[in-house]
Length: 393
Image (cartoon, rainbow, N blue to C red; front, side):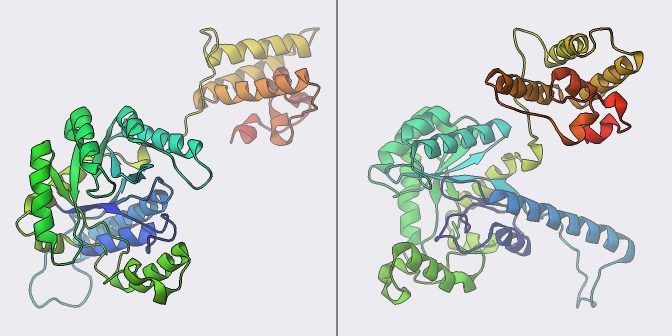
C-alpha cells in the first residue's frame, strides 16, 4: 500500500503555499505516492486543477502501459531487467484545512459524497458569517456538521487544543486522528513520543503527514517572499518568520519512514486512511433544484402548463402540426430531464410580467413550441424551419 500525503498546502492558501495544486500531483507521481490531499485554509478552490492533472497523468500512464505491453520498455537498455511499477499513479484526495476562530486547526477529508457536501456546507457557513476573505467557524459548528469526513487534529494550533481534541474524540470517535508532522528541528522523535502518548490517553490513532508548503526544495525562497508580503516586511526582516530550511516539501514514502523511525505505524495509517477515502470529484454532477410543487412532478407540471398554453395561444384549436411538435419536445425534455429548467424560466417570466417588467425569450428559444406556450417567447416556431434540438443542445 503506497503512502499518501494528506495535508498539502497549495498557493490557494494565498501568500503561504508556494506550489500550484497541479505541481503537487506531478511531484507525487515522481515520488510514487498513492495520492495527495490538497488541504488549503478554509477553501477547496484549488482542488479542481489538481484533479484535472491527476486524470491527465493517469491517462498518460495508461497509454504508456499499453504501448510497453506490446512493444517492450521504452528508452535505452537498463543495466539489469526492470519491471515497471504502475501501482502508484497519484490521485487527488479532496480536503480542506479548517482554521477555527481561535486558531484550532483541523484537516477535513471527505470519505464520500455526503462528506463532501458536509464540508462544503461548513465552509459556506463560515464564509457567509465573515467579511470577504475570512471564515468564521467554531468547534460547535464542526461538531454539528462533521458528517461523512475524517478529521486530522493539528497539535498545538491553539491554546486549549487538547481539551478541544478531547471533545472531538468524545463526540466523533473513530473519525478523529492526531496528526504527526515533522518540524525538522532535531526534536521530532521526542515530540512524536509525547503526542503518541497523548493520543493513547484520548483513544485516538496517530497519523503521519509532511504538511508541505511546496512541492520541491527550490521554492523555499519564494515561500519567504510570500511570507514577507503577507506580513508587510522585507525578506531580510523576516527573522524567525522565514523558513529555516527547505524541508517542508512533498516527501516520498521512504523519506517519511526515515523521519518517523519508531513511529512507522503512523505512516501506515496514513496510507490505510487514504485507501478508504474513495470520494472523487468525478462523482459530482450538477443537480438542478427541485421544482416539485403540491406533489405534482416536474414532468406533469410542465405538460399541464404547456397544454394550458396551447389553449391560450390557439383559442380556435391548435393545428395538428403544432400538437405533434409539442409532444416531440416534451418527450425530448423528459428524456434529458430538463423539465425543472423550463419551469424555472416560466416562473421568472411570470414574476417579471406580474411586476410590469418587460422580458422576452430570444435566440434559439424561438424554436420551441413549449417556450411559446409557456409565454417565454412570442412567435410560434411553426412559421420557421429551425429544429427544437438546436435549442436544447
